[in-house]
Length: 249
Image (cartoon, one colour):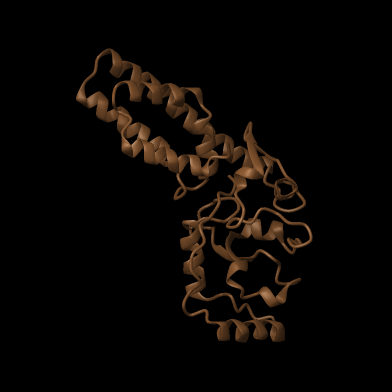
């Protein structure tokens, strides 16, 4: 459960320079939540595939809803309160943890501008910072991304599900090699597609799933068997590229 690098989306057409200036001044005057505009929320959710930009939890589900994150906190940098580059989709938990941390004086990983692969590693379902930005975002100083109860436990559950599925698939793949049939072929192809898809950017907690998948020896063995039997097609090549994009390796 950790961020993947998001692809920037165009600023909504409604958010003209004049409107930005007007809404920014309104916020300065009376503290109105001027960023709570449907077209802003929709664009930010599109950017993140409906996920929190930091922990990758799916937003807009029951008991989970999106808040608009100001990467440079609005309390410290009010001039950026409606700057499109400063707005991100975030869950309530991460927003509360980050609070008014000064990201100018003590930078953390930016979900769009920074590639988390350069700043973080996953080991034993815990994240480790490779840089100051990575260490800050992991620490209790900012997002507490190694919170044992809420996050590490969830990563463990996700990882174990992937590992168990790979163990089962390896057995199925070996059975196919011993007695190949179309039914067995289609079954192992479908199962591998389903496992890999969980590590793509559209899925909740894709960074954890992708990292566990690509570092698992059973996956490497399954891939080699698929290649040897001409089952590793263009779809799997594309899927693996998408998984690699999300993996922190």
